[in-house]
Image (tube, rainbow, N blue to C red; front, side, top):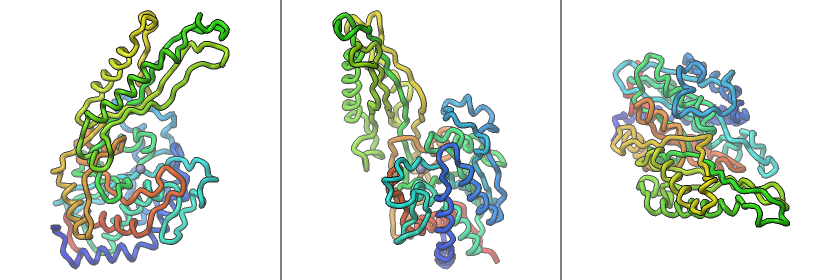
Length: 432
Ligand SMILES: [Zn+2]
């Protein structure tokens, strides 16, 4: 059940349909900007123009202007300066009574990789056979277009929201979101305080991600002793010493996937957590005994676990696997490096979840709450801004792969859902 009047609902849905050609063009323009990490400015300029056309004043929120962000436990340096790389925040004040809502979308995309493997220009942005083509169409420039045009449709239908609505477009989500959504989450609304809910248009196929795993990277280094191959047994092969550690970590993955469970994740994935042994390196030359071996891996932890716990488990596993006398003098080291993200989870009773389900119900659809087995920007709002945040968006079509696209009918449907969600969540008044 929703609180939206039937006539108002029809007016807003009609407004979305009327705006659809313009929306497709906007998403196409956004896709045409190759906004990979570090190069988000062109896409942000396209967004800014559109927001200003909606009479919104656009605030630039740069990570360098957020006090203490570099000391924040969630921050990692991506190696790219924040100069000319601002997030955009546009706020539309409501009439004062309703709940506030943020739509937060990232404008960065992952690289296209080998262009030759694509069957169309990866930055085409063209619409063909009912699909918008190109990198980011689905993840998530379509969603960014939808959240902006949801507001345009409300304006067109003469609907004024009671609660405040903010639109944020952020950088570097694909690299971890540190100078992006972490910055906007820490900065909060211009007027201070906190928003009442955040919706992120990740391609969730109209379901909701309301939880995510935490992620850590680690590196195990094992020492050996170099020798000429003709005297192999004078050396100590570091790769051979690494092997039992590799085995033990592989077993840890098997053990955790059968013992760590969260039903939100296992509705659609086989397991809640994983440990991926991502890269192994040892030795430089066939005729030398390798004197060092390294293993780099990614481990995830469920919302019910802590990062400290998972780090201890890994370190103990490595220590126990290193049980031959060589290791007494040459213990393996474990370093935690690079990207790391916290886990997050909101209650399935959160009103924003019910609001999405109510709205999808009126569109003959449904939306299931799920857990995502990796880092998503919603964690910043949940963990550091005391704000319930969900990901909710259209389908994922070849995202991060070749031939990414977004069906126009999904773009239309998610734009309608966002417009109705804003009315349902914030409350509204009709203009006289
Ligand atoms: Zn994304």
